[in-house]
Image (cartoon, rainbow, N blue to C red; front, top):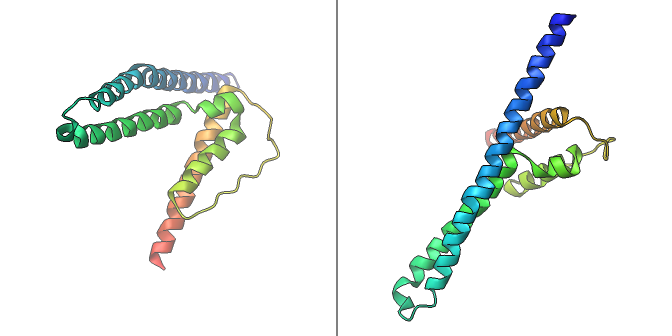
Length: 151
């Protein structure tokens, strides 16, 4: 029994370490790279007010679009690494949020039904359940799309 307890403690320590690293990485992306790209976007916006903007207008517009895409991408990466909805609102809301984002990508409707709407678990348990359920949703969608292409 003590060996099982030691293994469980090691597994919990590994999970906690991985989640701490993901949280740190997400924070670094959000707090480090995000402001830099925002600054680039603001600088590009000021260039639009130059007199000879016909020559550079298309370039500036394109650069602003790319910068916006980078900012959205950073937010998505940050959220995927450390889901803020999970931390702030719990497991079910986080899964519902993931499902809504997934529905946008395809021709499916995902219904989340739960008897534990407001119930909270330890952070490690919520993270594990969230990642497993998201993987199940992704695998189910993959199989669904694969089967639809076969028929």
